[in-house]
Image (tube, rainbow, N blue to C red; front, side, top):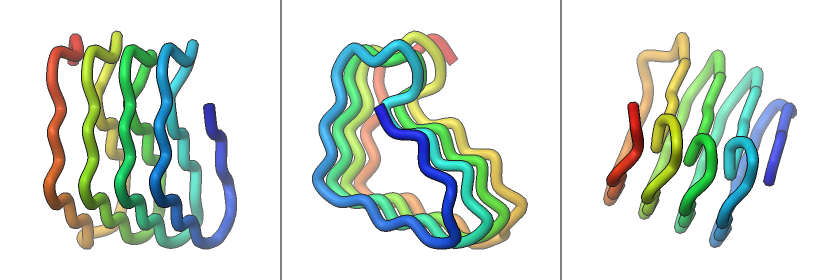
Length: 90
């Protein structure tokens, strides 16, 4: 659904169903803030490849064929709040 590559990303109130890849794919050189994200039956729920900070708040990820949340970050500052991740293969 989304492929985003930019210095700072703030995504709010996103719903994604049956995408052939990630519902949200962020490849960012800086900060990511995701709020109120719903991801169902995608390959990846949320794919974050970031060199900086990630904040995920109120995330629902269900029945994705790979990771519900794939977090690849060199940061030591990742915050996950109110995250529900169910029935993904990894």
